[in-house]
Image (cartoon, rainbow, N blue to C red; front, side):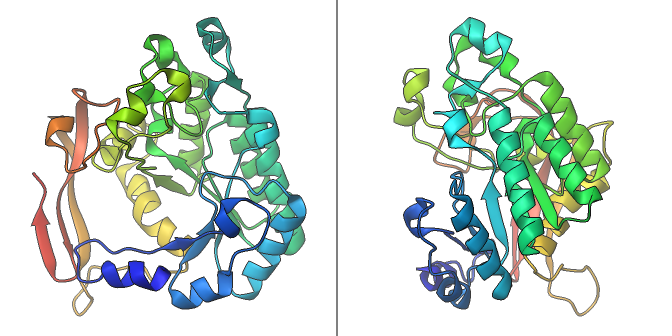
Length: 318
């Protein structure tokens, strides 16, 4: 399956780097065939937005991955505490009647994986960071010299749970939107290097999965086309554009043990042209994606990619 994905992705302007599952069917019970998938071209291993709750299984995964030099991504969420992740547990969401997911569920999961990483002496990458407590735990781990890296989605740097008043299911994401103080903590963590990577967390969904009652709606935002503008706005005056670009292009490659492209004579060209100051309005009806599950529809945006060159192909972006 990994080889098929890599083969199907060849000769396109966009490179595809598959990630394999950590456990069979992402159930967190039995280790998947990590070595075979790595031989087939998998660049990392993750159960995506599912946590390996069994600490013994997680430790063995780290130890085995360390032996084959395979990056391990974990998702920080103690499901016994977080429940169905309908919304952040806060005063605002409680007043609105949401089933709250406490931030402590993320903090506990982060601390466990940090401790397992230290014990196994194997690096771990934490995805889905959304709370101040998780940021504090990661910052402390880095000060101790533990090989931990972390990522945040662009929209978690901008949006808070105060936007849930009208029950717009396009704001239902995983992890849930947190408080304003969490958002500020995430921005500071990006600026000081505690957070290594900013991702789009592009999660397209069809209309039927979003145009339903909140409890039944799926999680996620279609965010590839808006991600740069969102992080550009969120980090304005907090971190330089150079630091932002580093966290969406260079740091991910380093974590995945990939070479970093350089712009110099004789190198294979691979670059994106962007304009950080251009103002534009996002219109889902003109989106490249087949999905329309975006809370940014009709919103004024600042900054966007304008062209891409890769694999000897050049494309202007409308």
